[in-house]
Image (cartoon, rainbow, N blue to C red; front, side, top):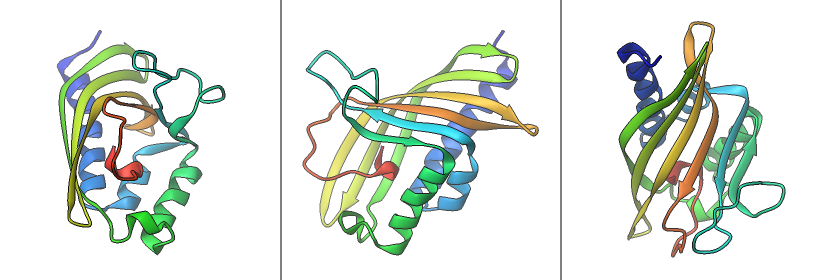
Length: 164
């Protein structure tokens, strides 16, 4: 059963993640994830079919493990990713958040999102759905899996993990 406390705990993690991305608090963002996490943004196969297997279909991102996320953070912080230099400014807005399943120590959370991005004098809007799997780890909730469904995937600018 999803109690109000569980719902509030789930919302706190999802909202904190967005805030960490927007404020460039990369280490705080990494700390929200489990060591064996999956961060996945599948691409659309066609106008109505989202890729459902990262081994079979192209993905915008598929990062397995917190070390892979840490590598992305390193590239952003060090300037090794030229298309995100200077860093894009972002503002994530999350709505319609609800816990879709709650088992012992595990929550499935669904939400809608929109990110406004400003980079090199260009403003862009990205939007879609989030599906988070949260697990209780040492008394706190952490992200074990994040699936990002990007609904407007015809992109004028390159994107990175912090923009979705």
